[in-house]
Image (tube, rainbow, N blue to C red; front, side, top):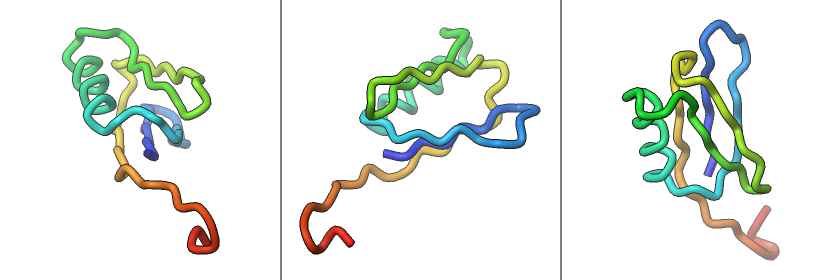
Length: 75
């Protein structure tokens, strides 16, 4: 699923494809905003971690979970 993260005082957003579910991403964002975590930590499809200081979060956009198509219909 695609996740877009806006960071305060930064003109570009962070965009990543994550294997985490929408509920997992939402829970991580809620924990970061509630002060339970100092960093928002997400993992992309390749296992790389993205860390954003929770006090710098401007917004988080969680896309729909998409099933990848295989074959000629994938175009």
